[in-house]
Length: 347
Image 1 (cartoon, rainbow, N blue to C red):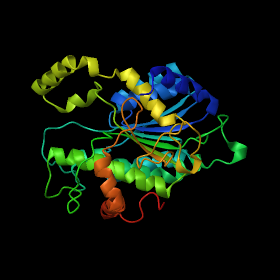
Image 2 (cartoon, rainbow, N blue to C red):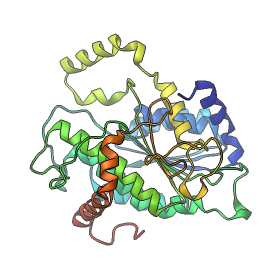
Image 3 (tube, one colour):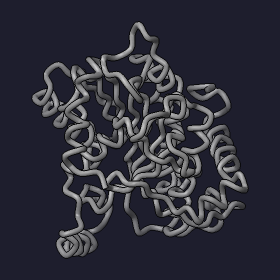
């Protein structure tokens, strides 16, 4: 477990990077995304921040509050229905028009639902799209900007030195450690959909894909994080009776609930700590083991407290069978079928 003292010490040091760190928060208008964005704005110098979400009025309120927190920050809202891949592409184009490098891509958009398969107009289940496909689409589109941030020349490098001094990181908040068997013949769950299958597929495909991405993009660090039990705004998807039941359960689970502000601080730590370097920068005694058990491998599966997570019994078998490659090829195939081969990025 990483202590809160360690978390706060790391986050307080982010000013050493100097001004103009760029961060994109997909799902940044509520819950963990908002809490992490607040911590980022608080602890950095003149940050350039993009909040990506659906609720413009809520984003406006948050941006005003963040301006009070750090008047020198440049804060932007990008409206996007993140369940739709074509909307993701439009959001990425807006960001790329303003920035040639991105230091942090933080992905936390999601939903709780009791519905069965609920397809978007693009033919993907909404929950599976939000939790996996759209997140991977953001990553793929913005990899050129992330890679550039991770390969800054010596002359323009930030003031912070040592492992990971050229910050370039992707964090997807889902449930590292909750991996399970995949239906390899139906990865999009067109025929075998259930809420349980949707959860397991999103979690497991994320853990496999971050390993594939780390291997092919060694300048960028990829993190799949489990937040623990955090009281966020996801209950808005439910009816009154269900929301009441969940609130009652949260009261009973209070000793195990991570406060939202603490969750934001801990996710900022996961987003910036030199314990999680990209593969190209691995080194040092304090480097964490990656998803494959190798220190500094560039892909990390983390629990809510910063410790290593991951269902290695499942993941080891999939690594042996190169299932990660199959999953990523499937993912790119889905992108091409919906968005065409051109897309936003040819990376």
